[in-house]
Length: 533
Ligand code: F0G
Image (cartoon, rainbow, N blue to C red; front, side):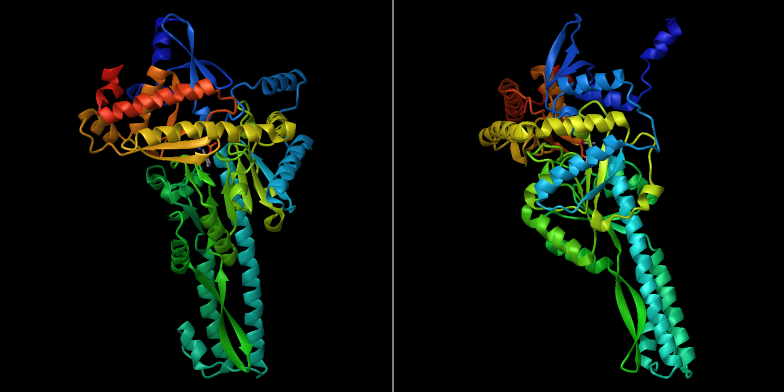
């Protein structure tokens, strides 16, 4: 390598600012190898040392890094020259994957209405496929509604023309038009006002409903469904907006509906009079919900509020998109965490562990009742539904389902063991630990805010917006434990290890967190910053 190219290679060009942030928090290490629940770092002498992985690839390695059966299968697929790029041909493996997902979902929901599958490559892409499908469906429903309004207008016109109905001042006043003396002219004026109103209403952009603290991705559409304003507001003008409602507040659901509801208008000839009719307009395209919020702080959706959402959406005919990208694929002891709280989605999104830790795969599932086949013509992706990721995802499902669902039971059991450690810390350090939340292998530990701490370093860390990252840096350096805060709620550390996490690793995590809690109790902020390294 010439000197210039060596210098160029050292210069950080791949997201250099993030690199600085990693440096600040003490997280700028390179992992050189990964296996099971362990990542390896090389020390200054070139020797590898293990780090227990509680970040779990942001939740994408529930079956561990390089699961031996998954990697062996991947090798086999490549050795067999599986046709990875064979777009617009039969994809029986994708069909098998959809069938297997359906079989498991039917079991968990105890319902057999099929879900059709649209594949993608990333979580946000699956979310965007769901909202695009929901918008296509909404548009078609609006067209049907406008068709029936048109039929009503034609019938009203005919009734006035043949003298079987007359226009009264009430209808004209309702639409803000003058009442013409001639009946045919009067009905024409009503119709024009109605068309103006309906055209304007039908052309208005849809709204989405989502929960405060929710995270559904960072692409142009999905970021508008993600609550964090820092991510969302700079891109507000790029896509349709969401209204965010707090957890456990049915009143807010009803209030947002009352505020945003719109109607289409029509006419009917009843008892010899022309009357203005109102038809509920589908303002809301979809309601997005995570059964357990991940990035927003590990917040569990209550069974009661899930029911409220379900009933509310049924009442206003708004589809529910259950985003299982982080909570799904067995993490909470079931394929769908939502099935545990009785929530039924019109759509589901799955990603992360679907790719077995080696493929990039996601899927959007839509129930038959809502399905619009035209979507398949208007939506596609070069890489989606390929043989490699479909086969790998099938292998993942095989591993989850094997031995009567032993992997789900293991997620529950390891999750309970992890939870017991976190609960013990909370009991010992109530002054430091504010809350412990989650289910199965999706757990979060929230620290009390340190912005008023007596330690100036802690106050500074709290003000930096990187609080949890500094704690993660300390855990990595001192305890060889990898974890992360939930990025939109940095006071919460999240723990999403693989089902192979051992008691020893849980002990290692406990010891690390015990140390962190002790430092916070002692207000030894300097230990958590560069000074402590
Ligand atoms: N939905 C949920 C519930 C997620 O947790 C994520 C990603 C996405 C959608 C987007 O998926 O990154 O594949 O496009 N969550 C990451 C996290 C960023 O913090 O766990 P993506």
